[in-house]
View (tube, rainbow, N blue to C red):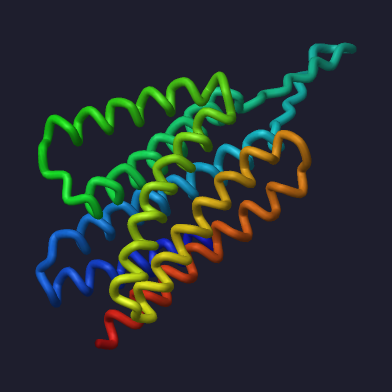
Length: 204
């Protein structure tokens, strides 16, 4: 569901870009395309953990069983999922704060890559980094909401707040599996709120 909603946001953001020619909507479209791709790789990484192939070879009276695991595929898919996700939110961060200096953008992307690289050793590093980025984004949209006081701005603020809280829940998952359910639910709600905001903007 999160992937479908992300793709819908990609389409709506691109339509708004075509109508307004504002590059920020094109950047949002690219960012959510990366998010949709990241979620797809996450599904692959989860799937291969549980899937193994078993082959049997017969040598006269003996039977040899081979079990093929997919650890390498899991690691690659998980790395790509995290890299694309953190890159997407970094793009959104640079977009809303109007960061145009390519050196600063390159530096942010470099630190995003480092956070992804170290997340292979610590699950918390990745989600803490994403939560920090989303915290800045949420605060920006909170100020935007209090200034504009329109429904679409309120929905955008709610969406990134829900996404921020989802990352906090992902961190607490290490203590209890139930937090993973809360995290995925909040993440989906965040995407749905944002989709609602884009529909309102497109109707105008």
